Length: 281
Ligand SMILES: C[S@@+](CC[C@H](N)C(=O)[O-])C[C@H]1O[C@@H](n2cnc3c(N)ncnc32)[C@H](O)[C@@H]1O
View 1 (spheres, rainbow, N blue to C red):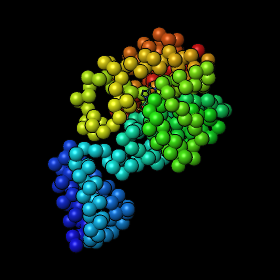
View 2 (tube, rainbow, N blue to C red):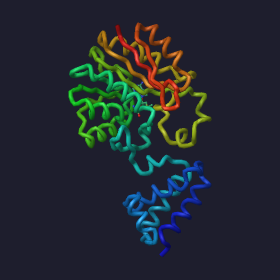
View 3 (cartoon, helix red, strand yellow):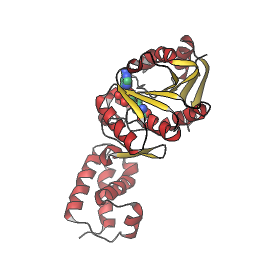
């Protein structure tokens, strides 16, 4: 039987010819933990162990998927967001670290509301809604998505994180027409259609198009969401949006056009405006 350290070296070589050679070693290790049902500490202590045939076959299959560019998170079916575990499938966008800035801003503002009413538009895996529910036990949270299959995953994530969330299927705020909220939060699709070719293979070929693209300039969803959110937010309430690279001037203009005030942008770790925040007067 080949020892694990040799198997890992072969695996690393295989992944080095795939789309992400710089992550080959890391990915090979992660997939090996997954195939063996073990963690890093175990692997470090057992590098001379061999693996059973069935485990070897399972590992080969995982490596083959990764070598074509499939995201690790879809292969393992799990990821972490805001310190919480999430199940992910190709029906949902893999939650990104940048989106944690949105959660942080919402938590900061919601701390001034005793029982905030919040709606998350385009909930996907449920990442934002579940993270908010986890930290705001008194909040009433609704989460909406156009995708039936994404909502099934979001429901699972709410259940395994003990989050009480009302999930609804439909377009933007239509499923909660007539209701009012202290917060509308959203990480909507914002990639311009023309940018498709420049996306990495992991995003372009594996993540759901419905979660990514928003017309020629990437602003199509914001153009409908911002006025609809203004009507749904109570005076003094907030709209908090994740935005794409270079979109802050257009978003500031849209927010002001529909009556929002106190328009502010939170930068991400690279200093890029990533989250737009505005108040309904
Ligand atoms: C960028 S993903 C965000 C997912 C998740 N909130 C996150 O931050 O990881 C956008 C989500 O919006 C959903 N979506 C797209 N258009 C929509 C619409 N018109 N109404 C409701 N949801 C929509 C997509 O299905 C997708 O789940």
